[in-house]
Length: 303
Image (cartoon, rainbow, N blue to C red):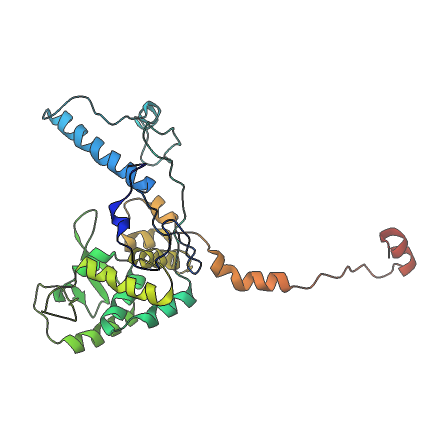
């Protein structure tokens, strides 16, 4: 996987950016030609877990073919869940992955993205994504019974726990949803509220949802994804000063608060105005206490 090309990268349109190049508008790199390092590590974890499960149940071989780190096993064997995870050496075949901070969509680019949406359905999806932090697959599973208009929240099936949990959203998101539902009319109970706009009436699929963002990216020259909206929501909540970190963790439904703390970050885009004021600040003039003669000050500090 480190050397093989990824067949998913072969489906490219004419004029598409080169794999691995950085988009100048968003600052995000495009997907590389091969498999990402995180993908390699994920596959190793899946294969290791498969053999570990069947070896524990006595259904398969005792030896796990995926190498493990003895140093990591010793460090985590008696570690308390309240203690931070220590830094240990990687096992063989594991790839070194740089720790990249989450990236939020700046406000000016967010306004452009919102204007690029072609219908009320897409605008409602965008508003719910950036105000609730819900994942794309979770939003697609929302039914008419999952919309709490009075409480301004929706119920989603969480990715990890598979539990039906409430997620708050902004009033603007419900306004956009009401405008969208006025267009589509009455929906079937138990079916997804997000419907396709062309062809036979059917729920909006995940690939069709990706296509919505791809059309906007082609128009704007960007490379945003739907998961960037979740990062944007998390960074806005964590750095707003109105919500505590445990409250943000409850909204995002993170199992570990350390995952939520990664969103306590400041982007360069957000510091643009402050940096402009800093660079334009005049040089401070030296001032001396009254009572000293100008000739003495010049003799001591120079002209």
